[in-house]
Image (tube, rainbow, N blue to C red):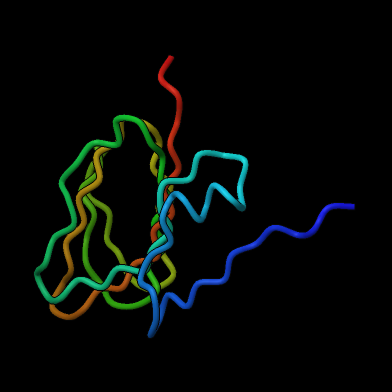
Length: 110
């Protein structure tokens, strides 16, 4: 029986992200990054197209909006976005801080 493989990362009050090198030791899939991001009021993340990756974005606190390829989505705590390859990712914080948990995984080109 092999030893369990896991990584512990204190995303709050510690390391704000876990990079691909650490994730490769834990997951078989090509994970890019797992991070906790805090945007200040009005700050933006993106825009960028997920050319060779997919992502999950979970709102842990705050409000804002996401511009996706299909339109605008209101963000608030508890909202989760699943973004597939070639999706637009553009997030903007509202009147206060917006905290996001983001997990991104690489995908192969066809």
